[in-house]
Amino acid sequence: MEISREIDAMPFRGDLTEEEYRSVLACAKIREYRKGSLVYSPENECLGLIRVLSGSIRAFMLSEEGREVVLYHVKEGGTDLLSASCVINQITFETQMVADADSMLLIIPATCLARLKQNNLALRCYIYEKLGERFSDVMKLMQTMLFTRIDRRIAGVLLGSGSDELRVTHEEIASAINSSREVVSRTLKEMERQSLIRLGRGRIIITDRSGLEAIAPVG
Image (cartoon, rainbow, N blue to C red):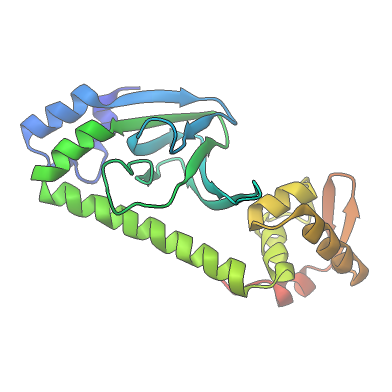
């Protein structure tokens, strides 16, 4: 995979001078990550700008009890900058990133990014625009966690699969909605009692789709 082709596809490519473009080409790199491997943590290197060329990355925070709170996913074609905390002083909370699948990332290292953003206003605006989008995603997540009932969140996950039979564990649903497995299991059993679903080993069968739609979050 050619780095130049990937850089040419970046939204800010047209705002780079020829010298800046050559600088990005010289420092950019492509890395591969196996599923489950750590991409970024505050204790490790400050990556910089990452673009997912294939696969998917999960960004999360850990509670004091060690429970993972998923903030968002970066899928193929997506760009992220929260791993550039050493470049952007306004980032103060600690996130970690893990590969959800075998992934390939384009990385523009933090040192290169810091140098470019000092003199390139368009690039600096792009950086803060992407950060604004990410913080908006996080705020929506927090709003859902604080104000949307567990049964509504679970119904949204079940309906979002597009199938009436899901091969999914209670633990996976709990991770998707940032809840505990015990709470999810209890809620699923209540949904089964209401004849909305039927539970099996490692699978959930939707028996009343309209009933789930009635309690799922709008949009």
